[in-house]
Length: 236
Image (tube, rainbow, N blue to C red; front, side, top):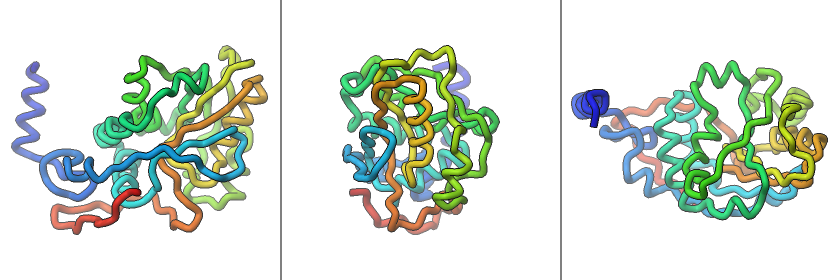
């Protein structure tokens, strides 16, 4: 362990960070919260421009809390911990596709956040199979966060907002899209439309979470403290 690692470990001991899930001091995500995560591949039964959409968890409870912290507090470490657990459930991606593409975020948002959360969440899954992300999709406009918009507004702002890099050859290829949260399908549809217009023979998707229509969507994270009550809600 180098000097930087020793210093980081010393700071963790002196100033332990709260768990993003429950607030317990010690680490970014405690083992109890990691153990609560459960990822089971299921299909989203809804019309889409994608031939199929697989999701791994309902967007509720502890996973919702962790994703909110990871995205909006810019905690890459939290998302990496989620990704490690997710990788246990994700397998055989290479049998489904020729290219794997993460849904892009706008370059300004990526610069501000420091990463694309989709890539962080699925990196371990791809590493386990010796696969890699393919670049080639671009988000043209930095829109209002979609969770603030209704379905009609989302469709309007995302129309033509995702494009395929002219240098990326997708014609005749099966493309697998990766995404973090499926709500209305607007973003995946925009990407699928762009890929199929560029000649992709098939577009499927894997998303971490499904925010079901009957569940109230709240991406905003309310800071937790060390005396915050734990959520008793488990992910089925």
